[in-house]
Length: 459
Length: 35
Image (tube, rainbow over all chains, first blue to last red; front, side, top):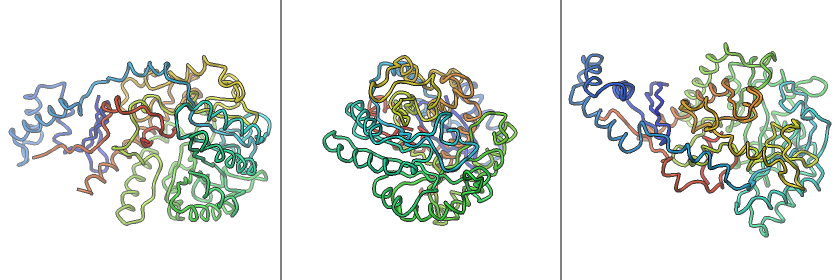
């Protein structure tokens, strides 16, 4: 399977199953489009008819291009076949090792954002804080169930994790104390709304957290539309100076300024550029996921504008790179040479198998987006995963389980998408969330175009 | 003339034999790095 598209002056051909990317001229683009449905002679005749008035298009040249296409096909880099379908269903046999936990250290929040999937941090339940004892047991559970894996990830999540900051620090200290004897390496992430950030938080996080996610939605009026405190006051003025200080002191360590865009700011590129102009250099902006009838929900009518925004963003990022003032956008950060292997691309995010969420009282869920839905309770950190049937369901929840994806060129980039989004959109974790698919495909087209542009500039 | 330029990419078919160690981060899958 191949995918052809034109973007920003580039003609791009992707070979789905080999992962190959080809930048071609318009003649080759048309020839590849006809290949397989026309004979070589028919393709040459069609090209001579279309481009015959051009000096550079001769029959000999077209025959040579046809040979190049054949050579790429023979090399497995064009029109390659799917050889992975059988592997996808072997995944049920894979081990039950866990390598990442999302620790819900606080089911409470000091902001009251109406679009929050976590229902203002409470996950449709009562307010709660994780105790050190529960967190310690969760870390032990992770070590005990991680097999030979060295790298373990722990996300401090909520709600607002800074509302339980002492426990976070104590858990980091405990994890560090067992790393050597357990032969493990913990990588911590902190996701915060910024309200409680101070110098002490910054110093600790910059010492211990591999990554920090800072929630800002963009321009002041956009941010303050949803991200308000319990009295209804916007939080932009309070948090932005703190986050700027945080990011500056972070030096070379990773952080992300992560925003959410909604129906109210479909011109979200302006929010990304606002954040870049403030001085943030590592950015992410995600579409809101909520009930279709919600006023902030994105609509079908929004899609053309959103596509345009992603293209504007890609072009602007390339322009700023050339000017020596680059910034990164998470979904455009693909590495074509050192990206994920086929096993990762088939198995996806690992929710419900190698990645689990832990509630403040120690229950296990497939991921943070399922917390609070009792149908998806998998067990707890003392007894482990007791709902093994549910775990098996998640093991097989991959791109090959979704027949809607059979003909999709992006299937090995998205791995079938988010199980939680699919569940909320279709009622099944092996369903699809078509709106998310459309946005994902546009982002991938932009990301690959940027790589093609960079490769060309480096020639 | 050369009408097709192939950008260097990881060979997914080769990764059937070389991949699967599981040391990469949990996850967008496309923007993960192999570790």
